[in-house]
Image (tube, rainbow, N blue to C red):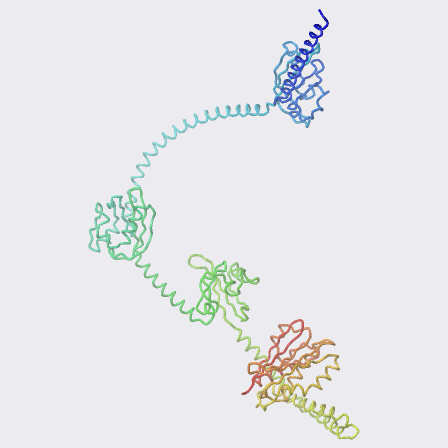
Length: 640
């Protein structure tokens, strides 16, 4: 054989070997893929030592281990301790037969247990004994088997229970048949008693079948019809004849109940029967039942009650106070005319929404307390700048509803009159005091005035003549003030003339400037040309000085007092504004009350005198105060 031929044969053998190797590698890849992708857990271990050589992902995942954590362990490590006693028999069976199928319990890495079904095969490769094991989790199968066993047991119990029930039902049926016979006898007796009852009642009753034939009437309806000249025995006659259609409402209602199967109840005066009747019509399987209650007496009573209600409502509506009735949830059930004239139509609305214009009950509302204690109450409340005296009386309505009867009486004018009475009492006391001290005060004033006149007449005091003149004028004004105290408690004839308010202010500028300078404060004048008004110049000077000095005293050093005059709407306005801390709103409401003062050493007479002067001049004085200061605005009418 030539060398070339030998080489070709060798190359052919090499090629065949490469093909065979490729097929083996391909087969190995297939088997390896089957081993790796099988959803059963699979592993290969040494048949003698039990050491794990290879595991697939399903086996690792089933036992909770990573890919390399099981290699090197023994197959017996995953057996539950109580299952180790079965291992000798399992190994012997595999050794004898080469195969063994068994159930056991494995332990996961986290210590949890689960039942498995296992197939083990023993093979020999290159003289080495190996064991191939397939494992699958049978937890769900075991659970199903247990449930099936329980179901079979329950089914057996159910069959036994049903058998017992049938025996009991048979016995019960026998007893019921005996009872039925007795019941039929009782029913016949009850039917007769019912008929006797229907015949004895004063309400009328008619039974009508679906063919509109009257199957039964009781004695009461027979008598009522007989009194109207109709046949007493109606059984067997047709209900829907022309006679019954004299009352269309009755006929239409009966047709509606027969057709729709819904009961109806209504009241009317029946021309056919000649009475006020309350009709109750009920559907039956075989037709309808008509109950008729004669309510003539009730209608008379209702009319009397209605007339009584009318008289009561007329009385409430004629009452000048505000009367209304509340439910427990604050809803207004009734309101008289006075209440509705004040607050508008309000029935069905909440009282706090109508009276206080609030979406929520008042924080200090006494209604819950009145309802809880069932006791009357009296208190005072302010609504819309008006003061009301409120009388509350709880009671229970005829339908059991708990209601509250309330009366609101406007006492604003009465309270104002009371305050005015107190003020006049104080003014009277001031007048009596002034009358007592007037003589003692005027004597020293006269002496001081005389010495000032004497000093003013000397040559060496002429440079100060203007000051002496102002002091004498002020003494004269003090004398007039004493006289004015006397006038607080009584009216006096007005000594008015045409005066100019801006000129009066300018004449007092030196005195007011001196007061401002002494108190380290400033005065600002914004005076316009205004028409003359009718007034008393001394009283207006006194008014201006009192209000200006009050403004100075209310301010800290550096503050500015502003005096303004202007004309608007046929009025001359005098406005005095300070930069003080403002007045308490409660104090503003009581301004003008004698002896009421915010000053530590004040007498409380200054504003009372000012108010008296304003009233005598037919003027209006208003106060506006906040934290930035107080403004007094006086409007004097212009006389054309």
